[in-house]
Image 1 (cartoon, rainbow, N blue to C red):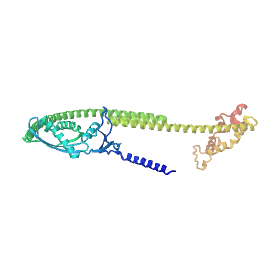
Image 2 (image 1 turned 30 degrees about the vertical axis):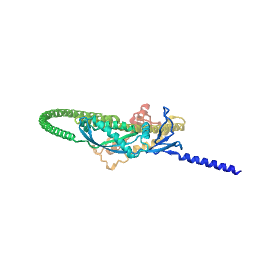
Image 3 (image 1 turned 135 degrees about the horizontal axis):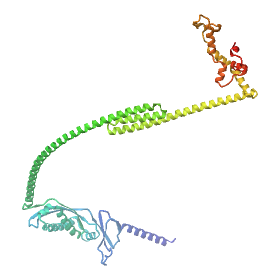
Length: 470
């Protein structure tokens, strides 16, 4: 590459770098406590006139070199001591008003432009002197329109008028009023001091008057209170006596009612006991239920003489207990009935089983007897004959013959040639039920192979039964 081209590129780069540096160096940021005023060629107003300056608060702007320049205005508040003396009031009395004003450069759009035009470049002392002259003039004007009493007593109105008038004039140079503090107001003639003494005297007199009126009201109030106390005590005593008499009457009436209720309760209790005794023979469930109802009625009647609330509570408790007992009795009765039913059902099933097996056995016996029921009965009797005889013998088995004493009034000779002892033993043996009678009681006839009835044989053959017995 030719050296001329290289040199050209270097020059262009240097120019671009210089331009960038210049641009960056001319870009300015405005701090929050300052106002940046750009002056020079800054544009035109709405009406076409050239603007004198452009103010920026809290931002940044590019400052064109050669055409524009910039400066900062400080927003720090400025404290100004204004010791106004010999200011003439509306009453032509000269007063001294020492005060302190706090002002600062305004950040409002139009007022900030006024500050840029009138305060830019001025030192702090010059700004203070300018503001002080404005404040002095406005204070004298305001005091000349107000009375001393109004200035001294109505400070809010005075400060409001000062703020309104002073701030209006300060805005014209770009300042705003931040605070006004009037320390004290005095006059050369002692008028304000006299006003204070007059106000103090009036206040003291009013206080004394108030104390006297309070004492008078207290004495009157005490007398009225004593009167009301005596009246109320008397009324209370009369009401107490009346209340005692009414209470005694109520007690007597209550005792009569209580006795009546006790008698009624006793009657109901006795009636309930008799009802309970009469129903004792009923079944388990009915008896238990009636007993619980009678007991609940008796207890309810007994408790009717007590306090109503307690009676109602006890009544509810008894009802709950009666319901619980009735439910328990019902369940117990149901359980007993179920148990009895199950036991009887079991016995019925056992009896049915026994009869079924007996019927089966009898059927087998009849089958064994060749289908003849009489032969089957004979077989069963023959099988039980030994047991029947054993039962009859058991009746006199343990009889001690040697311990039996027989008294014979016939001298030892019995009837039909038998002794009394023999007749006694024969009678004992005859006391055993004969087989024929046993069969007759059972509704059956004695089988013929076990013997025949003598009377039946005698009737059939017309023979005397005594002959057969012999």
